[in-house]
Image 1 (tube, rainbow, N blue to C red):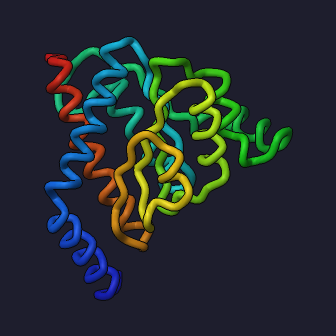
Image 2 (cartoon, rainbow, N blue to C red):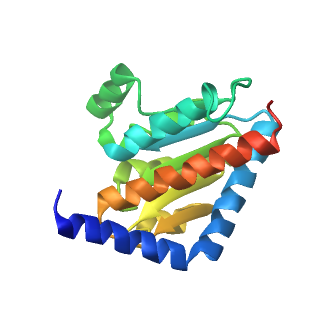
Length: 190
């Protein structure tokens, strides 16, 4: 690991610390959206590409299994895990449809779609957001690099002011862990 990479990570954290009040407000609002969704009987669907796909799976697991304490499972699904489905859609309809097709089939009003993207420019996430909007499903996005086109297509976003993918993902995961903690506390899942 280079000194430059570490220095860039520290600068990202310093910018995050400077914007803590505003970003904390955004994270709290997103947490409240998660709570409303789960209280209302909805499911939270997660999607992303590459490392962001791993984050989507990680977060769905935190909700279904547990985070900080033993509690009942919460309804969450990662749209990144069914390789047969992903490959069939990619082959038959194109890779830009791998999440949109699942959103169309699975998401209902009362559910929530959470997208992870460091660029905000992935065609498959843009298509998923479009389909969710048509279906009346709200969309939250965790973004970086200014948010890209996806920022203008979602109901709520958390944008990390950085260009380095690894640093963006590190902040996303830290913030999302805080959100899971808030959800567990708000739903009183003891």
